[in-house]
Image (tube, rainbow, N blue to C red; front, side):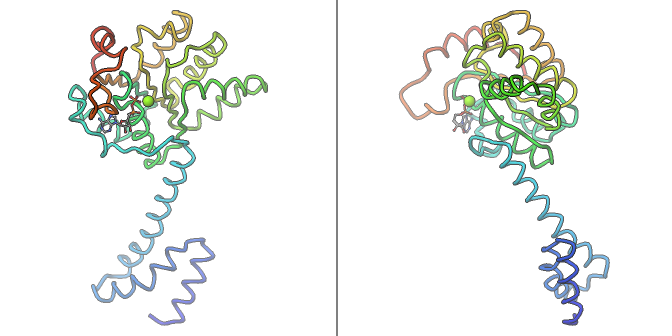
Length: 265
Ligand SMILES: Nc1ncnc2c1ncn2[C@@H]1O[C@H](COP(=O)(O)OP(=O)(O)O)[C@@H](O)[C@H]1O
Ligand SMILES: [Mg+2]
């Protein structure tokens, strides 16, 4: 390739703000000559580098913006520790159809069974698939909505949040809500209903959500909207955190495993 042409490519790639084209043009031209690619194949290979790099940096930006407390992947989830959970269920969710259909995922189970892990892993997948994602605990969501409400812009905030394809609400039920908090949370759920996805995690079965929201009617109306289009995944067993300790179960877990977790996948 002539030095002249390479210089022009440099200039044009800069004008297009496409640094990978500049980088790939010379290198791939040599490869093309060696391998006998035609012009179209060469052009496709160069553009491919730019697009792949943009996709990767877009995903990385979405992952950083999501506010995950840590990074977890489906690949590091040990399914053998959770025999009741079908790997296919999670792999299917990882494919992202639920996001396209504005469906929800609910992860229920005792502490340490990987609810947050799976919620983060699915959130990261969503970011890779091009969806904007936000992660926070139920308490943090309520604080955010209370702030918006106090500033008289709750509807604007809910509308803004609807532009996120996925919102993760971790730890529903760790702290009971006051009535105004329960109402705000209900509005979050309603505003996303059939528009955009939610992933919720909870250590409590649905039967006990009434206590969290202080009101059986509000809880029932909320659960109704959440599970209308949802995959409910129930995790069981002992904490993964305690797997190599002498401790077999946490105080509350035995009773809950026995009585509460009877939803089927
Ligand atoms: N089946 C599993 N395979 C691999 N790591 C797991 C598994 N279950 C839990 N963990 C790990 O154990 C820790 C606790 O899991 P976490 O998702 O926070 O539990 P939960 O949210 O259900 O309380 C995390 O570090 C998580 O990555
Ligand atoms: Mg958790």
